[in-house]
Image 1 (tube, rainbow, N blue to C red):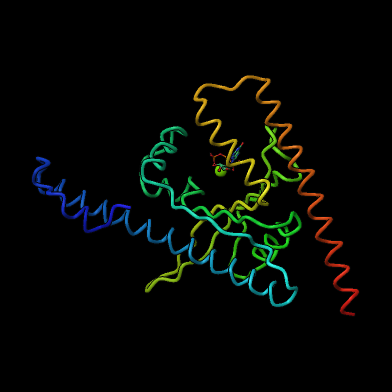
Image 2: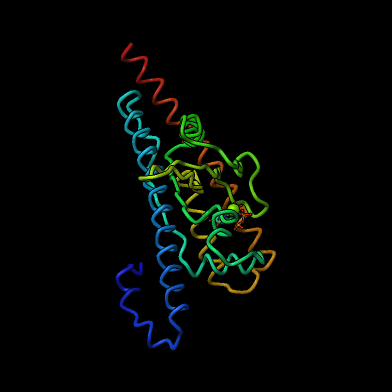
Length: 232
Ligand code: GTP
Ligand code: MG
């Protein structure tokens, strides 16, 4: 990531701008960096909340629902591309109002029932506001894509005010993540649209993965019940 100091080292006088334009660029850059800091803070808050939930599950139920967490801040280039694609105003207030996925967190769960447990516990927290929920597990996309998508707003407490920042959270199992990662790579590699036959084969893979997720879940349940019987 470009640091603030790197940006300040660009010699603005070389850009052949007048004083007013120089000042405006510096203000814009400062504002942009400030905004990126807010989104970074929101990612940290969500990660911490998720880690605390995972640890609590470990202590209470001897089970970690979360396999691992990934996160990313949308790059300035992707932000601009998305604003242009959607024909939106190019400004920071436009980013704040229209783009809900500048801060992104992906939660990879072990078992299919862990997804709703984690989602509901997170949404239930007092300081979290649910903005949107898209359940591509109950209703998978036509290509076979499955995941639970949440957009939540989390408060960031600053020195003088509190800002509510949106974060897109994708929650999925290891198996769903395996399919989505490879499908994403294949789409990216093929450049043009893939044939109907390949599309169908990818969909078949998604169906097999759904079966595997169910079977692994059931095996886990049976082992857990067996363990409970032994200890009670
Ligand atoms: P955006 O304008 O991109 O936000 O579109 P949307 O809001 O209609 O998208 P949605 O919320 O359904 O999905 C957003 C994100 O989910 C994408 O950026 C991907 O990370 C992931 N995603 C959605 N559909 C697919 C898919 O078919 N394959 C893969 N691999 N990922 C997907
Ligand atoms: Mg979206």
